[in-house]
Length: 303
Length: 284
Image 1 (cartoon, chains in turn red, blue):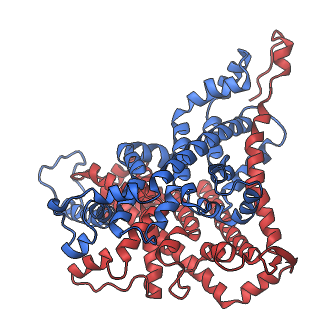
Image 2 (tube, each protein chain N blue to C red; image 1 turned 180 degrees about the horizontal axis):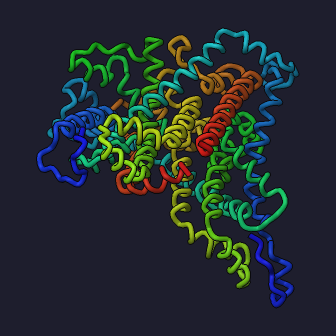
């Protein structure tokens, strides 16, 4: 809001109304340009180059890297694996967190203690969660199959079977995502106005109807936010794969970021060109999901 | 399920059947969610291979601190802890300063291009960090910062999300407050740090916690830009322990406990803040 400057204000103060204000953006702007926008442009540029024998991206090949990758069944597999891990992790974390928050909404014995327990996974990074799950899933000394055996279930060879390995990575991802999902949905359910809940209960709505017709619809923006951020986070899964499976068995768990890592920083000759193509594919997918989120949020607000 | 005419104010003494079922389901989910935490803590305080040999119920007679002593003496974790503390401190302070300055410039002074600048900040939120590591790796290596703490933090001295959080907080402050401070002769920096920042302390706290957690939990970039154990952060160090010959699984679990303690203290001590501040903050 522009305040009309009274004539009595000394000239010096009038003239410097903006002062150095706009220039305070400069430090952040320089850093974001150098370490975010420039590398983004450089990645696009690199994706048009092939490497020479010592790994320097010097040979301009245009869109050849893109064509190669699209025609490569291995890459198509990488796309499916990335999406599968992201969606499985997101669905497990969000659904379980939603169920838990619904169950804890009304007073419950030791409810506060349960809330702390359900927040604990938030204390774990992807790396530390992965290390624990490596211990749980380990072939001969894995604790999980010992426990499952105790209740009469013969657990799979988690990290040696391709399908089980995708589940193992997704479960580790879902576990550490669950903590954040629980915190966000707890905040969301507390924001539902109590009058609305009471009105629904007076109308005779049972627990299931209350959740399905009142609470979940009112929590939609938070649920949407979670599904989007956790899908994006899941598409960038790396530590879990590096620690648990190293992309195996037989590339069954090689996703975008792990493939990028192998191509650019693995043991072979660095191939920055192909790695950059994967980076660009990741950018495009994440940008598309984000744009979709904005559209859905916009509709939500207008509705 | 409550009957249609039941008063919602009625207080029941004996638990209803629905509550009992609810309690049992909550316990079952809690057991699954808690299992990885429990296994790692139990394994860390017991001799190696305890659970596989003797099951998951603790036997206090075999309690031991050996694994922690080994983790603290025969692994690089202590040194890496110091690296991580330095990374968190530098990154958080830098992101707060660059973020507060940028948010101020985006909210209070009116200037041409302000809206466009904010859109560019929003765009940074949609760029996955993993996709731009190759050019940053080239640049940081060229300027000689590979394998240094400065190299770990330099791409993250400014981040879009804290700018966005602070910008939203500042925008909610009535602009009369800013204008009054300007008419009193306060410069931009004084207005920002003496008036604006204290006025939105909850959001500033949220931004600090967000930045510190991101710095502490960072993995991909610190892994790429460091080559020696001594230069690595705890997250990279802990991920490499399982494949190291010098450690057995119990020592690895002890290492995880050590790495997770700071964030676990935060979760237990500040649970209410995490819900009301962080979780609600990210929704706005």
